[in-house]
Image (cartoon, rainbow, N blue to C red; front, side, top):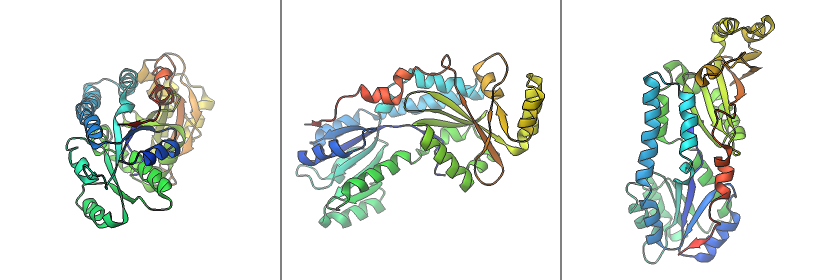
Length: 325
């Protein structure tokens, strides 16, 4: 699967003994990244050594949400509450990029110090170091390596980091896969469904979680606005229409649901404890297999996290990019 069950932005750390190179990175790296630039291995290692307890606490918090769901507590309000409470979650470092050739400690030695840090590792190498990098990659010590002298180094570096930022975290995926039925998991693994969700997710959200009850994706855009992508199998349209009829949806709306033109937000409303008539939204195919439909619904502000803590606002509050050390 290319579309991760759990995704959010994170910090990217760079370690290099060349201050001019780090200053160049500060200028050319995407502005939507939170970047930390380190000149000395000891300071970089010290910074990352403080993170594992916070990673563990965050993983435990997610497991608690699923545990409460198993006890009967709806997932959607729990996730919205998690996003509201843990406003510094974006500070956790997702990727560390290290130069191999440094005088006091080479890049592999620096990365070897990060035994418990769970993020992705990228090694920048000189031409003479390529075989070292290949061996390190084959041994699983690094996730990527890039030749520093490559003419398109900036683009290659950005592409590599973007790929790692969107690579599913195995531990988080395992936590949230537990909410999916085998049938739902199989649908998500269909190539056309996977690619369509990836397209939708990249376009709409910076952070999202896929859940199975109800089946869909809860996400936040860069401005901190929450929305719900309801997923419905074509086989389930008749049952959805029957439930919508009990909730007072008029005949024209029921016909739209039965024929897959619209979906109703019945499960979202139930999860949030909202009263009033259901909302209908235009349905669209998810994938090319004719098995799955989707519809997008906004999460009302009274139930959603405060947009002041959305990713764009959080990023604006961070320190300006500067070389540390």
